[in-house]
Image 1 (cartoon, rainbow, N blue to C red):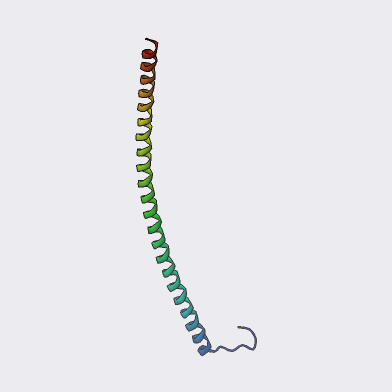
Image 2 (cartoon, rainbow, N blue to C red):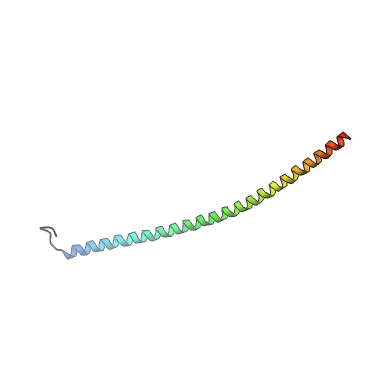
Length: 89
């Protein structure tokens, strides 16, 4: 204690009460933030899963379309070759 300061238990009780109230408000705010963060994380994981599924489907479609293009290119080449042979006969 500093010189001239007296020990005053009622003031300490008020200060302790105020500190406890502040602690409770901080604790409550912290719990709310944890809850919000958990909800945001859940939504983010759902979005990631949805986009990964969509990506997989798109990649399958691309692969299928590439196979079709390859088939059509081969068919086109075959028909062009046949056409050239017929035209020269």
